[in-house]
Image 1 (cartoon, rainbow, N blue to C red):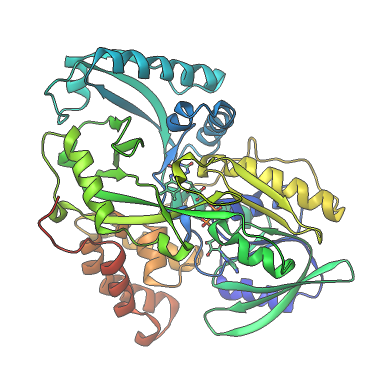
Image 2: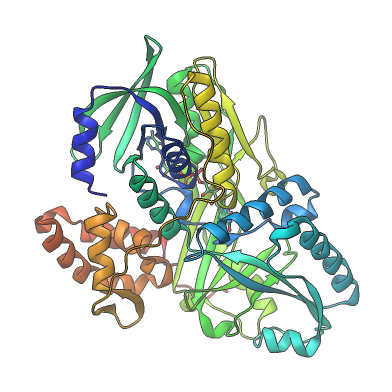
Length: 496
Ligand SMILES: Cc1cc2nc3c(=O)[nH]c(=O)nc-3n(C[C@H](O)[C@H](O)[C@H](O)COP(=O)(O)OP(=O)(O)OC[C@H]3O[C@@H](n4cnc5c(N)ncnc54)[C@H](O)[C@@H]3O)c2cc1C
């Protein structure tokens, strides 16, 4: 994917696209992939970078959601377990099975959660990742060597999937591109008009500030937490449907939990499930679920959330993690579909919502990363039938997502698992434009170790300048440093 060539193609295009997708997260890229493999002529516009919304900041689980089981949402769990199975089959290079252990401190807990997880097994039917089982105290300690042992009675083992969210997203975008879709980052949609049975879509090339327009027969709004402003571009009177909930994760050194199994805390003091999951040889701890007034508030972890995560994880581990131990942190906003006032976001459904307005704008939001394929299938079906476009049947049930092209060479940094070749690939064929695109989303450096990423940034910046043939001023090293310090590193403090 070469951004300049793609931009040029979009600017010089005179025919309307069959479909224009707004938003380059899991849902939008999923739609572009689905549409291209049905033979549609499709363009996707993303106002920032691919995955810069929620899709790079998930818990990285490909799962049915044990929490929704407790809430009795069996339809959602069954649907997600089915998609979990498809995703493992279609992207085996990046989705893997992971063993999860729920440590139990009473026999009652073991019986209660054990029964729930048997139901989880049953709902996955033939796409099971492995059967759950009750395990002894000794086996629990063997699988979770650093678990809190005081009062420990035993545990439950079950299996789910794990992946690398923004890396899968880029691989999906490259696969969609190979299948003919056009995907452009840093292209913000500013307005939508209907004329002569077509959409006129106004957009801005965010890198130059140049504005232009392009035409499409159908439009899908896949803007996640930002679907409401786009819905109002089509219908100024559209009432908002999205409520925002921030979810924060901390990344800790692996020695806090050294085994291969993930630890599940089935009920935190605010009634949530908390995971401590090995990820790229670090430990990912999350997540919170905090109502926020605007989507923009969804990016920044608060002190209270950091303390809550440290304290809650510490109660289940032998060593209490402290702020100084945090290698990185990140927060993302959940777009939860609601109509009316909301007091407790964890009670809102995680199911997705498809809306079609009177002018034919298709909006798809909510849901989960795990169910992106199904969401895309439903949205493209709606767009195709609404605009009466000829399209083949959905082909994504068995469509393989391409792994990234192999990249080798010298290591970027002794403490980061990436090479110079990875950076070159990111800027030459994966449309990475900024330091953040490379270090946060094509590679996961910022989320693995924020301080080390700041150390590596000047070197990455030099490689980007050479590869892109641009000047010093075009790489914003200072802006990158400020952003990482604000969003990915907790302020020092002695709490927690
Ligand atoms: C904390 C947290 C943990 C989660 N964990 C999991 C998990 O473990 N497993 C799982 O399955 N799901 C998980 N989810 C859910 C999952 O991450 C989301 O459902 C999914 O990422 C949503 O993708 P999306 O494409 O709809 O939205 P986004 O990724 O937010 O994408 C929307 C895009 O639209 C763009 N956009 C907005 N306005 C415009 C415009 N005017 N023009 C162009 N582009 C625009 C934005 O820049 C953004 O990139 C989690 C969510 C959160 C918040």
